[in-house]
Length: 334
Image 1: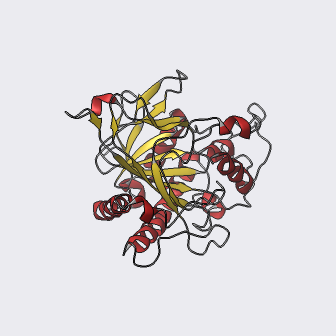
Image 2: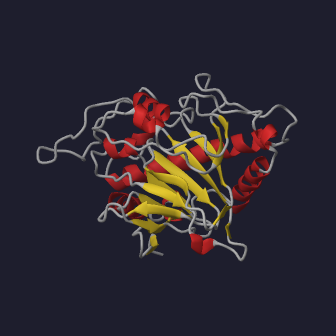
């Protein structure tokens, strides 16, 4: 079976069967297909990625159970005022997504004026990360919530490592290259996202246009839809990235794009609440998703990946550590 199942007509994102990489039967072809999609549009759908239907369903169910709690219960695990401590619960309208480029100065005053997105979320990370400790509900408030989140969090780290191996093979470098810079899951982040149901008459951005800022993002989404990516050839034009049954969406972040000397794209994307989804009551259904953000070790300094630059294609960016770059982006988000 060829590694590329098909390519979505609207967005150009490849749908790739990852099993051939995992079992070694079609390693190079699968890796090349992933990198090809990353070079063209910065996104890829993976089938047979290693997260079972049962594990995903359990995490979605626990996420919904959390967001169904009364507000006063959810606020027992509050996200701190600082965007740098990305843990705990944020109510709708609390966070805004801020986009800025490598060559731009971060204008916090301008960021303060950006409209918040209409969503609520809960964030958690590695338990040993004392620099950014988790903020959980009190014991007994929602039995099994913490355990399910952590199980999913650590399992996704293993999936991340397999994808990083595939990216290295696809780029023609040593398979373990990226793993030395992602030596633990401590810098990663699991986000449980809930976009409440809204009226079709309400113009609302569920998440405004932005790119992710770490290495890669793994995304499981429900069947509601609304994710859109910017067309690389038509800036400002967004194409749908619809749900595909049992597929994992993977996209490249700004850090990886910079690391690859722009060989790989970090594509602007957003989540909309399209009126076409409205039911008979005029309401657009709620949406749930599970993004898992994969970041390099904080002391990793970006320099171009071997093979992505030469005399004809010089390096485009000054070195910057992963920690410094992520801190700038997080500080702007609140």
